[in-house]
Amino acid sequence: MDLVARATGAADLARALAATRDAVLVWRCRDADTAVAAAALAEDRRHHHLGLWLEVGEGYPAALAARDVKTVAALVGLEHVVVEADHHALAHAEVVAALLGDGPVELVNEVATIADAYNRPAPREPVRVWAYEAGRLVGGGESLGLVEAGADALGEWRRYRA
Image 1 (tube, one colour):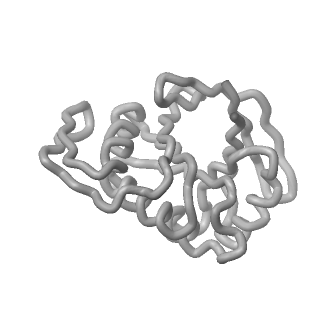
Image 2 (tube, rainbow, N blue to C red; image 1 turned 135 degrees about the horizontal axis):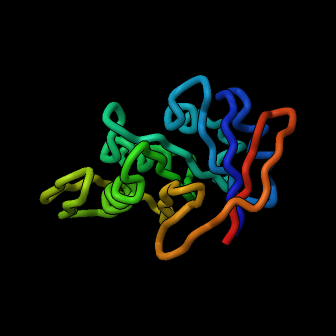
């Protein structure tokens, strides 16, 4: 499995999807909220191989990111989400992953204490959650490393593979 991380403007999401035909695009929006911009994806581009790269922290906690992931998954379909954080990315990713189920969620870690929480409905298809840790994507007992990077008309991109 290859994941290609790319940050573009909202207007370039469809072009970024087309440019990443051989892999899953894990996208971050440079000029708008990533989840909102992805949710606005045109009907003919929905359900393509898509993931989101979300930066969580004090102003955008993992629990809110999980809600956004569920919303985008319901509207356009998602396969992956990468959680990036200044500290404890794995713990933030654990919160997102836990809140993607039907609940109830009971979780205590470095970034959250969650008791008897529900975040429904669960996405129709499973969403794989990764943490960006030390230049790698880590999740579900697997680790993807950077194998290639480059730039094109849409900007810089990075390819991750096991």
